[in-house]
Image 1 (tube, rainbow, N blue to C red):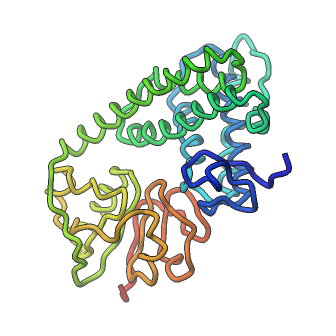
Image 2: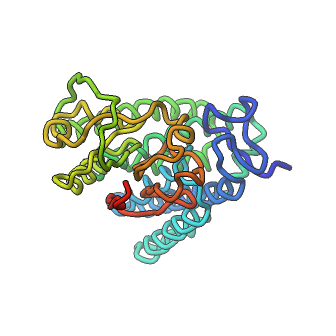
Length: 327
């Protein structure tokens, strides 16, 4: 394969085929794409080893699997160094699982993702890719539920089983069944996240959301993580700082435990995620990205962006920001 990268996991893929040059349409560099491939290969090796050991998947192991898959979603992490650091964590966890196993399992190598991208059978390539991209999306939902204290051992086991199949399964009928199973499990993950969100923040209700930005300091929060939104609202409560949602965080206004408890959750800033580079131009406020839907930053606002994962040159901070006196 002569391409500098290969990525076709999202609807932005170049020519509706794949991004293969120095960078993807989303802004991801070829270096980051390579780092994400290595991370995915490490996760497949880790999941395979855990299944070979035959013990229940432990919570820290499940969290690492979901965090790793989550990191490889489009518009989540543009920094190859932080992706590589997460790969190191996977290797360390894999080694710890290996040395503690009894009886000792056979060593398991990382999976080479080029085997999938160069798979000569287009049906197998399509089926395995479908499963992989489904797992990545499921991992995001599972991660959000997990931080709210909701876990499901069968979902954790399915992540491992499906990841191993991507590397090992050749029977296309079984892979087609795995695609169907992935869909059913994705529905189960979404139900788990709904239970987590409504359990923590109440049943969402229709509300009117203001689009007016009031005078005074404010913070914009984007992404999907309602727990991070709650943290930000708690830490800005009573400080004269208003909070405005952006893009995918808009539904936060419908949850009673957020809307009614925090009157400084004032409204929504901007429109859809793909317009952020224009809408954040010279924005006089910090922006907190909680999860995916972040785009490469422009210099006019890069110094005011924070996110839990990483995109240069954003600050990777916990869920808090102290606005400067000029905002």
